[in-house]
Length: 297
Picture 1: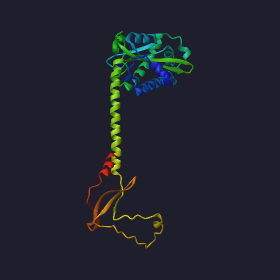
Picture 2: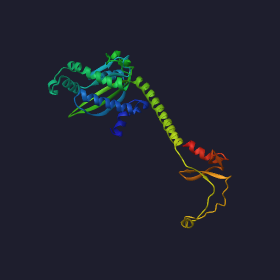
Picture 3: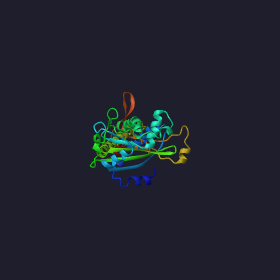
Picture 4: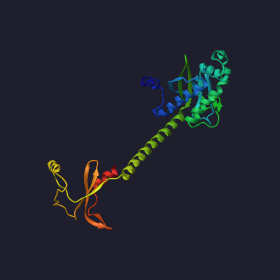
């Protein structure tokens, strides 16, 4: 859906930004509906969000009563209060259930189509309430409007969501009536969990990087003396050339580290012997700036 069309749908819808920001939820709801329709209607539809607004209980009930609607008990389904499919969807579902052509059940009564659609409604409820909202308990708890969350009275508030499904040359619709209060709490919990997960991921990433840096190896050199030579002098070097180390002092060696910025002196010491091996004894602490650079990595 284009950003312009989505803004038109959401403008004046009365849905809090915290609920609209649940992008993962809305994407999963659409995916659940598409996958369900593939089984219930016998084909994978092109699905589009065409409505998403806050309504009172009377308006939500009117929409569900106009279509093939189902209500779910508040105790077992506090989030998804009801859903509905239109007559085109009901006919296609009946044809799939009975293994017949769509034309053969077009004239079936609304009651007959609704009875055949109960299983499809239960399947869709399980996908949304049980798997997505994590609020469904047991099998689909079919109820009347008075037993659903908010009782669908005028004081109740619902988020009425509409999807259009392109079924070949036909266009069908599916509606969801989500409890407004439940979705508010769901949004708070989801956004808080997402923030905590992001913080943990950032901490884990920093710790992993720090552990990697601390486990990395680097080369340390004990430097007796340094000679400045021109490139021309270096070109004349050959086997047997003697280079006097006039500044060399075994009691004053530099400890040098290879870094990405080149060789850096990080301390000084003196030459000695430890366990019959030549050794360097540090006489000064390692450079604070060098240690700080490692820590901040």
